[in-house]
Image 1 (cartoon, rainbow, N blue to C red):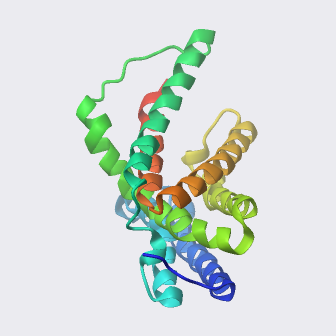
Image 2: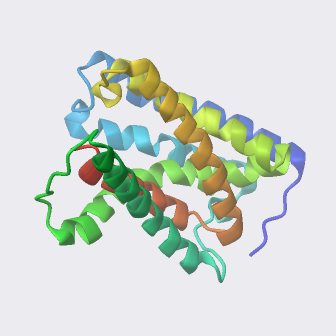
Length: 231
């Protein structure tokens, strides 16, 4: 189904999306930063934060476009291929980086005690719970809109910067950004956001769906958190 818009409508949608995202993020970040971290609000603080862009995208789609079609909940003939590729890519590069660093002696390979069913199914679904909230906003809703307004490269650059800024309070004010080299770590995080913004924006266009992006995000978080970072 094609969704036809004009640039004025898209600009209004972007403005509303940004305002709502900031407001929803503030509602989650205030208790997180003042209440002792991600365990506040009964442990649901992370879920609320991660769903801030998604909720902003849902509301903006309904208010401006009178439809949920802009979120990319459906897809096209290439969606399944992109789903498989996006789920597999984080596993491949996490293992390449892990084995590469182990070869240089920078890290030692440890064994994971996580069952394979967790890594393939249960863990991915749990990770998707948060990742879908982010991706509904950033790639499901915002990526196509910024491309229509600014073009692909400027639009995805802008979205990548905004995506990084979304994480900055957590990087600076919580254990999420804990690192023995905070300046270098945060710089690498910025580079990652920018690089992934271009890739995920392109994949969004090619598949016409948010699901490959959400599953990539879930796969990335799961395998980096449980296979790479522990070493």
